[in-house]
Image 1 (cartoon, one colour):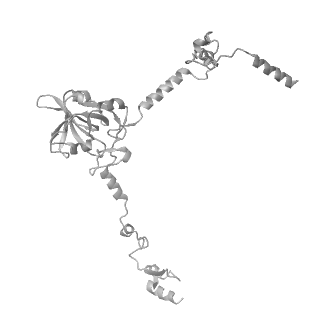
Image 2: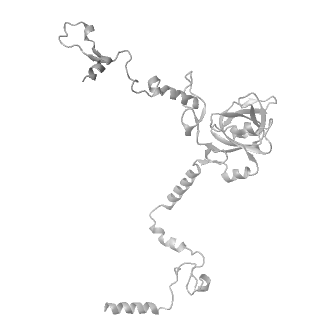
Length: 319
């Protein structure tokens, strides 16, 4: 009986001439004309284009177990957090967050000009200038106090570097100073076609910027930090460091290393057998005095040497 019923059901399915369409009947994308929404080249109905899911969303809206507004806020917060993540700038190698200029925009600006890293500027100078159009990128490490030029204009002298404990002086004049005077140490800037001036500084030169078009804020350095060491006068060290390499500058790293290094000659030479021998006492076998200690002087309570090292060797030779 059961077998006969299954056979009847199969015959009924095979007898159906009309095919069930993929698109729900209530969907706006459904059309009575099959040729409008399907391709029948191979005899099978196929979806052409993307179906409208608005009917489905309306049907299941009451079944959602989360607040859509909260979900949107959470997604936006994740996107904002992603924008603050550190990104390695490919030209300078600096890690930057809070990007003001997109990497694509910066690449476009640097696509047809020469890029020179700050530490390599000195080797790239030809006389007192750099040939052609060029650019560099650095971190603001120190903001000098505003000054007044001989013409009555305000300017400032910044210190910029690549967090390698070396800096270059950068003179800011005109709107280049006015636009960036409120920026803080740790900000990353791109400099374009700066003027080079020879001087008696450690580098032998400094840079000058006269227009805001020649300086571009990029973001904030992730690895900018200040040394945690103390100077000889007890004041805090002010040298700017790369936090990825530690909390001290190279000078205080050396001092800390010397502070914890072993100064004993034996340990430096690796002779652990003699490193902990008390040189004030000759070697041998010592015992404490025995017997009645009440009548002995204090000096007699010290250990008494019974046998020297040489005597011990001779004694052991015959054992």
